[in-house]
Length: 378
Image 1 (cartoon, rainbow, N blue to C red):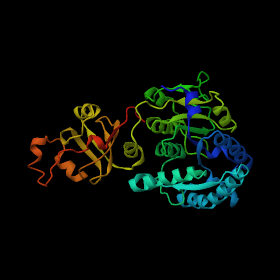
Image 2 (cartoon, rainbow, N blue to C red):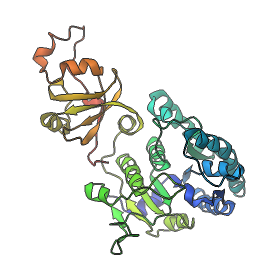
Image 3 (cartoon, rainbow, N blue to C red):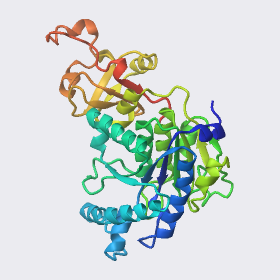
Image 4 (cartoon, helix red, strand yellow):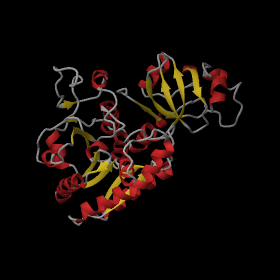
């Protein structure tokens, strides 16, 4: 297992995520904070690291431009604020980084850009080209066209997906918390900061809290989910407080701030990362205990192990695979539509030929090559 300082020192590609609560005060963008952030990111670039910045703050910037002090909850309002604010946010970022002769590029992503394989690969190629040109990509969710049902959810998860997409060595998530604590430090005076997490298990999950600040959508729970995606992709993660952006300098100098999540030795390969983390699930398949054991033994899913289907899906869609207790085992690309699978569920292979008469008959519901299991549940 690689140690923290070695990983930070050797890291070539680094994703830095900054929450809106670190950039905005009283619904106004703090330009001094952007200047401080730019100064510290420039140090990473000077050390030879390629940096991608994932930044929130567009909605708050829009409110600032239009002198709105109270955020409305309806989606069209938030999308309008994001459309207005994204212009200001990028303008201010461009000014801040120009002091260090660092050109910036805006990259707005929607879930479809990760879900569709062709867009997924094109997005990766675009990032690669920008980094080779010496440009700093600044990433945010495309809030102006997103709908509530199809969203990344928060920029913690988005930053992890970007890190996974680019095979990044390190993801630094900066927020208004010091890192992962054994309990809620606001309520539990005995709670202590967890310095390192070797693997994300149920005990680590229980340490995750609820929602974040009024300006953010995430909390420690979302950071654990993001860390799961990143570490399973072979990326180390540091969650730390960004109240002072010099924390970035301290990290690169070897200070052990925040919580370090170790990258997993057996990283999921690129295509399976896309299936497991990038694709949107269209439904669920409930499997019995025997099928669960078979899947964990690296075998394909057959109809005999299927107990039920949830939702409507078609051939080639990504589905969630669950136990009878409702625990998520993983995800995979399904070879049957939901209505057909409902008809053959529980049937053994010998009986299927009488039901499925198509040429090229195959009894496999999800092939092992199109299957991703989650060894740690999130």
